[in-house]
Length: 98
Image (cartoon, rainbow, N blue to C red; front, side):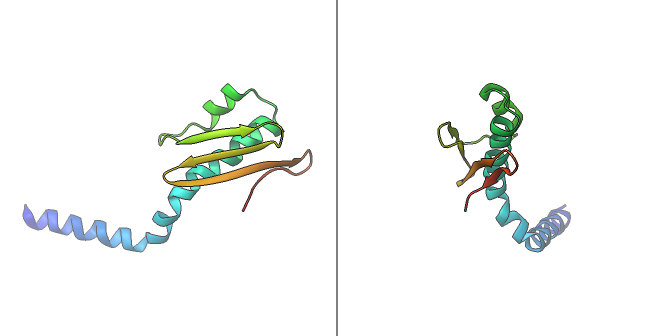
């Protein structure tokens, strides 16, 4: 039984090492996706805030999802990372800000 557990632990460590870049990038993806999709939902499609909050809801909760209506800017934070998306215009839609 110990050997099976040890083999499974080694296999998990090998997989984590192989996927280390994807695992390191994941926390930023949650906030980037949420900011961009919420921005598009609100300012490109014109839906109300309650609908858009439900649209971007994930299994992992966001720490922050707020919008600045005057600047058409959306800020999202989750898993310790934050991103912003801003509406660029009717032909460009929303884009993530650096």
